[in-house]
Image (cartoon, rainbow, N blue to C red; front, top):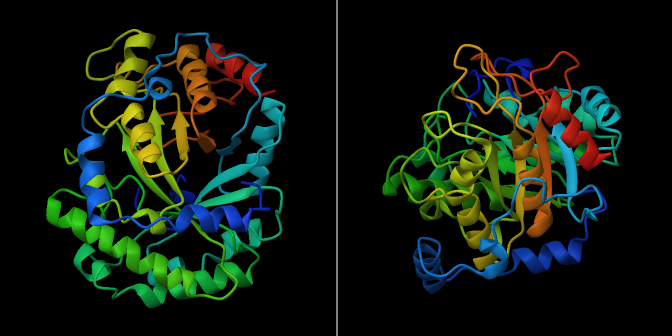
Length: 359
């Protein structure tokens, strides 16, 4: 999702805190050899699909009686109060929350003081912190891949640990397979640099005492950059979840809800690809952003009031190894509205479906 360049928190869109450290260590200790990389690049592009992963869902398949095994949350603004408001609206507390570090300057990226003040004492919610690879004041993938920015991320890690956020999930360089962020990957060379930069930053942040950070490798669905996102994978020991941002957009011309859902599911690097790739690398999947789309300026671009999308996403969470999902209950600077909780919103039927499933 494209965001306006950050000039403070107001321009960014943005597991329970009791994380099981032993489980984290088991997941992160799986080395990714060259052979595994080669197999991964082949396996996720074709061949047979596991029956559980490939099973299609039909509209209405999800039920409020599903025993949720994943953690559910929201991005509803830039404060815990906004997220609590969403929780009250849906009739169930949130367990995770997506946030965005301000990053016009290195000073802002190193010390997101307001985020720390807001979230450091909120122990019931797992923070998912979207973090740029470098700030708007300047930087590039080549420099990041050579470790030139590692000291900035060590400082960020120190500030998070001191502020009570030692087990934050870091969503580093999210949506890199899009074309809208400064860290977007557009060539095999850039993919190699992105993966190297990721490894440098993760090692730098893990070098800080008392940290328990997770690191979410997050694509956008559908793939917008053309390259296989797997080329940018840094290796199993550097990744906690294989994440995706998913929005109910039409694939070109306006289509019906199930056609739109199947386009997201079956795209070359869509939801099925994510699930297969994550399973291949023994990682859970996650969805730091997902949402309905309404844009009065471009009415054919989004699915609008689409309860089918809500039900299908819920069924997808339930039928896969999902770690967490956060609904994106906000707007963007281009006029698109994703707010499902707005009392005068664009999605009354989808909102009813969401509340039935989550309350």
